[in-house]
Image 1: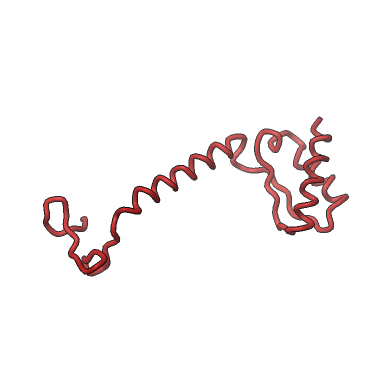
Image 2: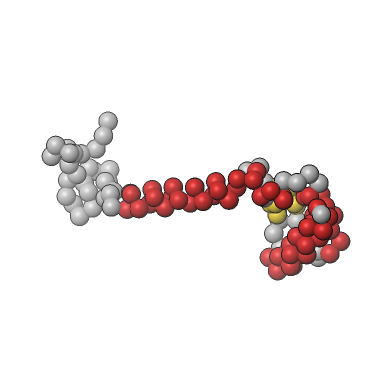
Amino acid sequence: MVADEALLVARLLCAVVTVIDPALIVLGGGIGQAPGFAAEVTRELRMMAPVMPEVRVSALGTEAVVDGCVAAGADLAWAQLTAAIPAIGGDGQAPGGAAASGPDGGPGGGP
């Protein structure tokens, strides 16, 4: 089963390698972690690809997709939270020349 799947993946990667010519291909997910899968994909790809990229197994394991979704969600949330906060320049002035103030109306800034 691993050999059959490796052949299918190698065929797909051959198309990618032919067009994009990546230096590195990273295999992830459950099938990418299967013992011998990366070696079999490499063997199959070597027989058909015009150039041979390095093939490695992801260090993120089977949770790579979930970890990526969490990271993307955190980045989006942070961007949305900080988008409404005006940047304060080195002179203590908010954009437009207004002085930044703290929550009590006093000078803004922090420790």
